[in-house]
Image (cartoon, rainbow, N blue to C red; front, side, top):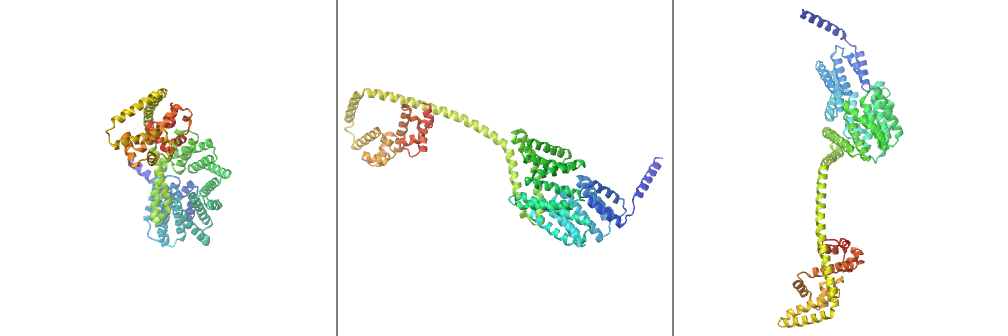
Length: 584
């Protein structure tokens, strides 16, 4: 019983299904084909309805085109799985067709649809492979119009990877061809071709300007071609929105905020009414960018947060998403909210690294296939720069930790050194004060001291009667040197070894030897110590002297410059002259 019911059900299903299948005339096929193509410029759901009608055909040719077009339409709607499934079906029906020019033509259509799908997925190398294969097939059967389409798509691809000059060159060649061969196109087909071409030319000039901001004429050219594209796009909604968005961007770059704002709001309203999440996201980003440019930060954040919300909800983590986070990071930095600034900068850097890394790989592959790798040098430089920025961001925390530890270590060491220096300085001050008190007492008892000194001298002479003449000369030199010291001759800037030797009436070699033997230091060290001791004594006894600048003190004791004086002073006391003066 169950088998009979199943058989009847299958029979009824097959009968109903078979009744929907029918033979389409060539005119019906061409009409549906044109409607599907025009729907690709905006009304994707309507295009899929036409595809469903054509899928009722029993002709493999019709089914091939229907599924190939459906593959592209589903990709435009963001449905990658369905797009791949339809493309596989299209290739299956194509394989059933006998070899002919018609089959070759259809195969080139499929390659074009697939190339566009890969381009939408940012798989630029795969897109180029499809376009190049398509050109070979179209050239083989003399399908010039299809060759022009492929070249236009290759121009679009070059614009995507930064080869703007090559893109502009190809598009201008296509424009000349279209004008000369308008008779090969139907009216709507011609307008569609011109609409696409001018949109792409505007994009290329705008992208070229972004890399050469000193060349304002490039922005003027972009504006000119976007306006022409809008003129030709009345029947092609997708092209019209794209061109209007881009024109708004040009107005923004020209600081024409009023016109830019109007365009962005118009597109946001259209996208919301038609539930077009893609254009709604872009319009909100552009409004956020506009308000950021005009320093209306709170208003900008409202629209940029919408971008994040739409992106996360629909998994549209594209260029507008990570640029939105870039602007938010800058706004929060301006508003002095470091945690939010860091959060959005991290999202931006992580997203950019992934996006730009993929773009770099794609660019290298595309340029390798085109043989124009030299045009990608600037893009590679940007990528390398960003790789460094990402590394710097990750290393920043480690740097801060090391910096803090280093500062703490330095502070502790500095405190210890200061304590040590202060102890040394205080000991010196006490020593010099004690010496001053001793000298005061000696001045009171000056006459007895002189007698004692005279008796000591006589005694010394008696003890040194048997000394050789060399030692006597040595004593004489020391005596004369001490006399110069008493007269403060060492404060003279010209008090050199030669100067002192001349004064004492001896030679420099012997004077140097005597100083080294008697004082245990070189002549330079001996004189520097006398100068520093003089300064210390003056600072302790003369409050006005403490107020002198380091340069003035250095000059007062015969130093040639303040740097060498300060170095000698610090070596003797452990602190700078200013620190010493402040602690007395």
